[in-house]
Length: 205
Image 1 (tube, helix red, strand yellow):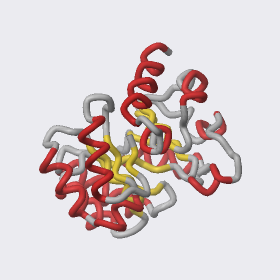
Image 2: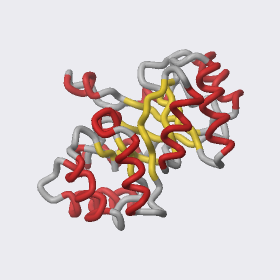
Image 3: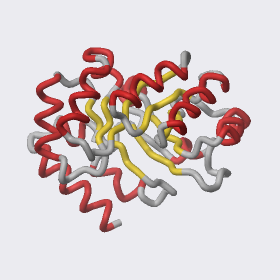
């Protein structure tokens, strides 16, 4: 479950309600910009074992910003694929020192050579990402998102961006290991029912 564009209290309401129905919680970039590391620390304090992604979208100062989020309690921190290899390398190094992970956000990235270089650093978690602004133009996640990584082996692939119940059957035919779902759960009239239904659909497919 992705917590995007939500107030502090609503984030905790959703976590408390859905923690048994989701496998991981991603704290969205907007929420982090609003509340900083305080919200990461508070989630970790209240939920010590909850797998937690900090969607930092790091594009510079990789060592410092990765350490910020990971030391606050995140298990994963996102780094943009368009960042310099030096930035990605530093963030990856900080994660490895803590036995944690970076997730490479492929938003807008189509350069296979760059992705090969990132994989060579040792990064193994990649997120196929359709941005919010693209979604608002009517674009939906499609197999074209797989193109930059489909030749890689031994990686974990997440998919994020506008995923809803109607898309589940199709996207789970892809080599996807994790779906990051936001509004289809958090903006639902009944988030718990939505989370349960989406999880059941994933298990059926």
